[in-house]
Length: 233
Image (cartoon, rainbow, N blue to C red; front, side, top):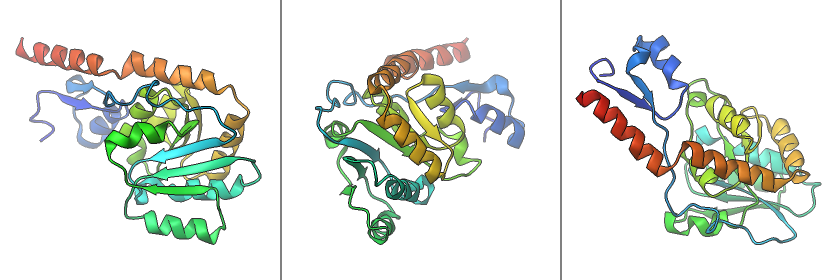
């Protein structure tokens, strides 16, 4: 199927090498076209009102691949940080297990909000000082760039990650936050402590600036039109 396509559009630059090494797909027919975020995610609708707490939020599917247990274990390791709260917004196959883990570790700072419609998500983003992205330590998963990263950046949010590969590269390149390796609760704890002491506005500004330079809807449509025009000719 890949070889029969005129062009293959990938949402992560890491897929170039993967498709070439695994299936001998010529890199000449692979084009990078990253996703954009919904218009409802922007710095105005997602801005947090200052308060006395540091609020960190994960939003999305709660499955085995997302490694939410890394967040829960990090919450346990950072319980000494005053006024630190963790928000988990979403649903999935591992939700109940994560609630049990939080209870087992006697963590009172983790709040499970459940699944919410996308129209309400800016309200939840507005609760957070930074957004969390975590995934399993898996070589194929590490090639991907979760769509939530674009939403986090479009909202002008700093990003704290425990994730390998493409997403870690993007966080570091954009200087939009801090990142540990996948499934590394100790490393994520260090990132959280660094973030608490950081200039968060710099991360926030870098996040939205990187989004505007790389992931806008207008840029996506323009690039797609260029690709289609190249094939027409």
